[in-house]
Length: 397
Ligand SMILES: Cc1ncc(COP(=O)(O)O)c(C=O)c1O
Image: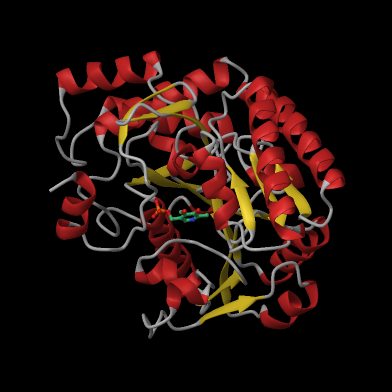
């Protein structure tokens, strides 16, 4: 049995795999067992901020493995505490709860919101249309998209959805019983949609009026992906809860919730927890990643390379307006909306050695490692131009 047959036989069919058997990865490239080399604009879906095989991250992992891999959260764990100190100091948040994944971070944020609300008869949770917050039952209750929800109900009670960027619906649905509003300031799975300044302004005006919590889901957009530590910083606001994951563990599973000082005492001893949350090795990798990202001023780099890439994509849109309908996003979280379904475009790109992801049917989502250079952006543009030219030729034949 070859690898693909074995996968099909033994692994539950929840992932439709790309036709690449990965051999190794280094920098911004992935290498397949059959000798192909791929420029990675997929980035492990926003996990691999420093690309692959970063020596500082690898060394931190090895050092921690030699000391210990797991003890229990009932002990003091230095890599965990140092990671929390670093991210709290960088962000201005007060404390961090550590979990293993994005969905678990969302679950923790839901529990904090409900517990906080229970003291004042607030239990309503609101999320936005087209949102993606994960696939556990709590997170899925917030996630709006039928593709992920169908057949899995009933969901958490007292959860409602508001149309993305619709101020009047937000105003209509928020009440004194609203405990928390969950938002991705830049939606990832939903097709790289950026919240409008007006909507955010309304949200925070309503928060001042009704006193609910705002939970920013920064699982995909956070940790410098958009050129700032968190995407909400582009709006000059300060949510009460911030969920993080993906790049937080430097490639190892790690998720967390940052809390503002006003809600840091909502959960007390024993009220929430998880055996593996804040695994020492994942925290060591995450700490090395954060140090590397900040010392290298990745925020400035992302703003520069992301700006360059976006301009070049906008040029491509001008060249092919019948093909590309919109280029949007912030930093190195960019969506190229096509006028037709984009899975074939992404697979043409793959056959030319460039990996990208197709989301929401017609959006090419670019989430490269944050260390890419302008030359890599040029390589993507040149391959994408040829893919589009080929497609236009076929269509006009
Ligand atoms: C914005 C957002 N929230 C939550 C999640 C869920 O994270 P995980 O897959 O680690 O459970 C994701 C994953 O893609 C995400 O993009």
